[in-house]
Each structure stands twice: as structure tokens, then as C-alpha cells.
Amino acid sequence: MNLVLYLTLTSTITIVSYIFTKKLITHDIFYNSFRSQLDNPRIDELFDFQEKYAWIGFAFIPVWLLLKNFVVSLCLQIGLILNNTKLKSGATFKIAITAEFVLA
Image (tube, rainbow, N blue to C red; front, top):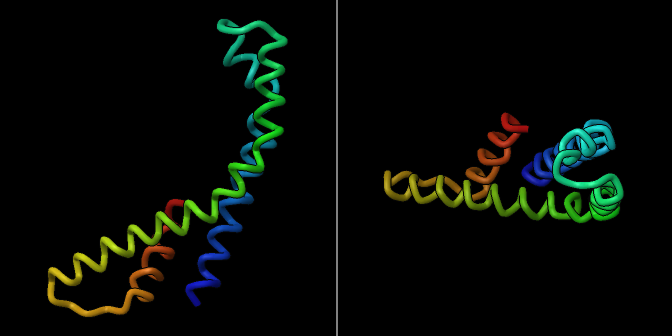
């Protein structure tokens, strides 16, 4: 169950990030943002560089989500230990993943 939630969360955030990168971040946005600071060829280089290496960001999304949810799960476990309550770490990981859907 945790794996299904994790894969659903990862695919959702990856799709949203892809749509954001491809549909919202356009040449016009780059030109409007950097026009006062850079000349046009340099803005084109920045945009091409961003498009060329966007896949690296998409590749780190699963790793980042796993690490982030692990830390949240660990914090929940510490709180439960201090409260003398026992709960399996898989259950706290499920809670962390479910809570991440709110942010997504």
C-alpha cells in the first residue's frame, strides 16, 4: 500500500512539474524576466540550458520525495517514542506520504 501511494505521489508531482516547466516557463517569461539584465543571445542560451537539463530535476523528484517523507516519518516516530506510543514505522511512512498529497 505504501508503494502504491509513493508511486502515485511521485508520478503526480512529476507530471505537475513537467507541465509547469513546459507550459508555463516559456521564452516570453525568460525574456520578460531577464531583459534588463542580459542580452537576447544570453537569454536564449539560458532557456536552452534549462530545457536541455530539465530531465535531471525530474530524475531527482523520486529521491527527494523518498528522503523528505523518510525524515517526516522519523520525526513522527520520535514524537511517538517520547509519548510512549508504539506505531510501526510503515504506518508513520504512510501518514507522511498521505500528508504530502495535501501539498501536491
